[in-house]
Length: 506
Image (cartoon, rainbow, N blue to C red):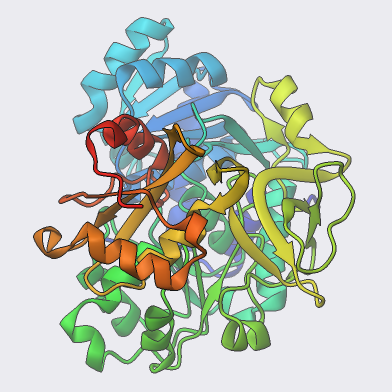
């Protein structure tokens, strides 16, 4: 029998029909109930003319119905294509032009935007998400004849958009199953009998990939339609959740709650953190509760690509580990030669879990997936034991006076300051050095942040050429991508000209 998500979901529905599959906003669905609902959705799609390989787009906020729709699309043989619920009509029209969905589902709040997008992108069937809920109690359909093959696409997800318009990343049934199996083999608590808190929107890999990954191995997925740190902490405590994978900001917001002090989190066997450099104080806060936050490196094209192992996560928490059972890292110089231990270069990933390419984009696929390796355009270095340290995106290098400055290194130094929650460092033109760093900082008391104090701190923490030449204070939190990462592209655009009115501080 084929090693596929479709087969795994049907197996759990048969073998463990009464085991909880989804716990969503307090509403629960067992594997048996989820399978029955998903088969009704698959029958509905078939009645609309959707065939295996067709794309089904989704534009909605996370919900139980949305989760069931993704599973129903998988069982139908169609390819799920979740899109950002924050997207404009123009951006949605571009996405529709790339993936060419036959059907588009939208919730009530997004229906008019999607309708506008469909008007721009051509005629396609628009279906209300309310239809998915109604199908839960529809008559039982005939069993579909579809059986997936490992190489069949299961979903298309957009990249984070941090380097331009998102590309459609294709995940196969076999790749997703290998990813799920890799987690369970290396950390059994992530599998059947365990529970995973999934916080990402379905328009990101942290939503759809994680949900399918855990359902495919029989674990219970806990989610809420809108993340709140209070609800997340309550779920972790009350349901004795064993696995929590999230971006740094989610862990930070939970730890900031007063009730975190007395929270029992001893059930968490595996906690993976990614998306931004982690403050040592945050690591210590969780470690005092017996929870080791494991730094992970990954990308939309490679999933989490695993996280630091036990020894590294404790002794060198800034490192991301050596890869995984079926995934490995390599760091190369500009000429493609392997970098020496401690030498920085581009991070490459080889894995049976990798995405298979970009939808309808053979040129970018060929450029990114080469000779069995994913070329990430991220910069990092390996130590003598093969542990990876992520430095930054190659694009986030500031070349000032001929010297390379890592934006992430400067950001990490600034975030050590009391009262500063987050910062973005960008390159701006400079007559003296070609480029110079500009630091945009944010904290709860913006009025109390003094640019001069930031400069003094950086002079103590960094080489002189890495010290920002400009500092500006942002009173509002930075915009975020669906994955939870800071939307650096938007921040760069907003502050591209700000240096012209700021005082040079060095």
